[in-house]
Image (tube, rainbow, N blue to C red; front, side, top):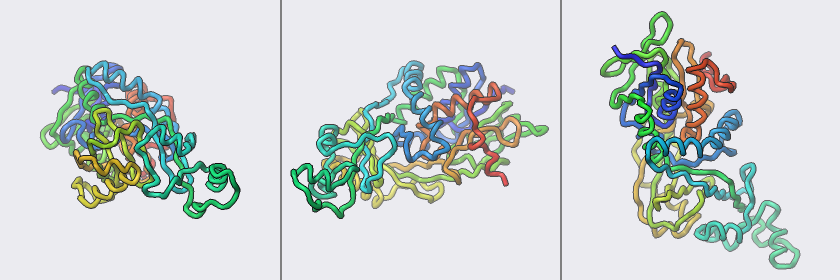
Length: 382
């Protein structure tokens, strides 16, 4: 029976990028995918490569390093696949209604915001000319009028805008390129077959059992995303977190990602505008809801009124792999030869390059040069 050096469970962007990295190191690799490669959380993602305040502190160093790796990561995938990946380097505009802005953000005046993104019109929602820097609405209003006194907007809170030098990527194009690059690297992919359990002999991993057959491998990595907890005998505490999103066309042509606490808008180079997203703990339910879509659409119109005249192109939902502490699970389990690279929650696209590099080093060389103890599968074992 044919065997492989490493078997990966799951053909999302984490499994695909890890497979490519392992092939660079000469490993024979098989990916076993329950459905169609790349069509779950990776396909549903927005693709914002944001390593800022929303990232847990323990994860931030890896997130920042992975963000820096992205141009080379994409270049390699494009070169090996022959496909174009829509990596955009225009940055993000963050809108805050409470004066809080991410670390490292460049505050924008109303005039500067309009010069960057003319379609953004906060006066529709927040009143006439509300956008002022954190230094203080009263002082800025006095400067504008050439007089002292209390601003008439004094009780409306601080509406701030800022620029962050972040990238974004089209995850669907990214995954398509990763699949083709993996095949180019002679990664074997078995799709439409679900792994049911790990095969263990003498306390060591020897392969997996699926609903159709068995596969032999000396090392197995669970990259199964939201389904990572369903493979016996190791119960990872990974739960699906649903996110509903939609895309529109014929919207005002945004250059930057625009996001607030209520909604984010992610432009694609093909003219689509992605609007998201929800966070729902509803199990493995991927149905979309008309009321939710209308709420997302209305929130987008608040930021960019011209979206009201756009046409809806698509609505979908994905299942993010959440963990109890919102951190990924990386490393070897208590079963020799059985590893995890899952639980990336909202950051699987962002963390793919660094996850692939660290896990490939760990699998092949036994160490990776980073302390992964905070992400160890053992942290959930009492």
